[in-house]
Image 1 (cartoon, each protein chain N blue to C red):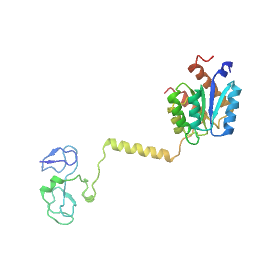
Image 2: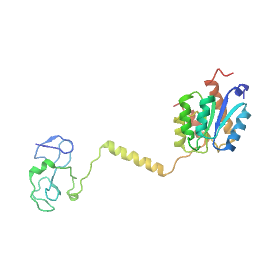
Image 3: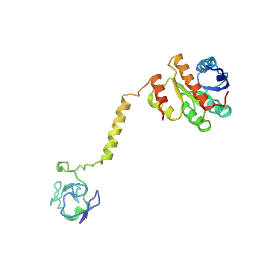
Image 4: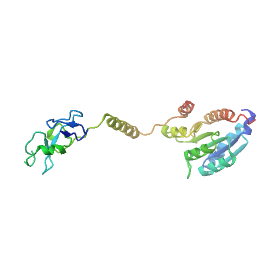
Amino acid sequence: MMKCPRCSTEQDDSKRFCTNCGIGFGIICARCETINKYDDKYCGSCGFPLSQAQVKDARPVSVSFRLRHFVARQYSAAEIQEMLELRRRIEAERKGPKTIGQDDIDKLFDETP
Amino acid sequence: METNVQLFSVLIADDSNDIRMIWRKRVEKLGFKKVEVAEDGAAAVAKARSSMPHLIILDFIMPGVNGLEALKQIRAFHPAAVVVVASSIAERGKILQIKDAKADLYFLKTASQEKFFETLTKAVALLKQRFPDVR
């Protein structure tokens, strides 16, 4: 058994993806630190033999192994929402502050808090 | 305007002497007799503390202690005062800050004299609510 490096749930050694959070398990080459596919026997970058023992240090990997050296960060729904809100605020500021006239000001102050 | 307006005291705070004179003439025209002036935020807070004016007309942009900061300080010891913030700033965000700091009214200096008197009429209505013993 091993622990998922993201959600810490116990996962069978035979699993290639975490059954709880879905990240892909990879094997890090001990020599060049390339992240290889779970069932690779030799490192695709330097040829160093890979061993199952290294799976215990597996880091999250992107599903696409063309991006071997890029570990994609997966954002939670709350983080995505925060980033969208931030972008909205930046765009609003870029458009410039909204100015209002006396009548609108009077309405603002007439509103019950 | 009813004559008992003269019993309310007014403090006008603005860093421009011309503006202070204009506001003073306008409020006196409305019937106010007790009018004090302050040339910056710090002086406004000091005078408000010593004389507890019923009505305060406060400029937003002043050197040192600005109108927003002065408003917050005054509200701490004089929550009943009717505060009118007067400024040329028309940005909604900044005006909302003033409202959140518990200003009662906001007057754009670029607005007409008629609008000024409308604002002061509202201010007088608030004065009568908050200071019913002033007769």
